Length: 103
Image (tube, rainbow, N blue to C red; front, top):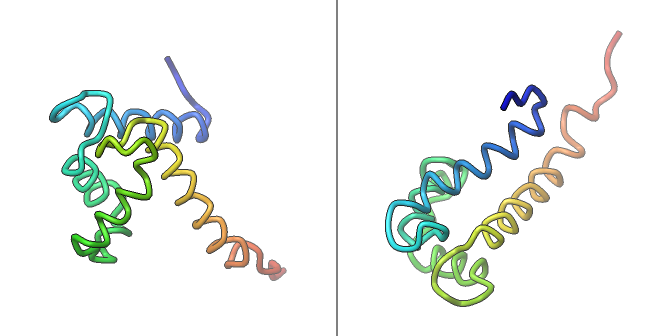
């Protein structure tokens, strides 16, 4: 399957990244707390640079874990990515890309 479009590639990366980490322990279709922490540290270094302490990580996991099973399923993961994407949009919408171009 050839995916030439960047948005299709981005969707594939989101799916494959989830499964790269979810298969390491326990339910292969869910992220444990340890798997989520590893994913954040390796794939979203913006979280690593924030240096979340254990209490902040527990709060994040609790907020993301809608069904309260102490794991993150794919739907919860995608909701998390959507929230991050909305934050990036807020950050970048008035950023350099919106500045008038000089001729």
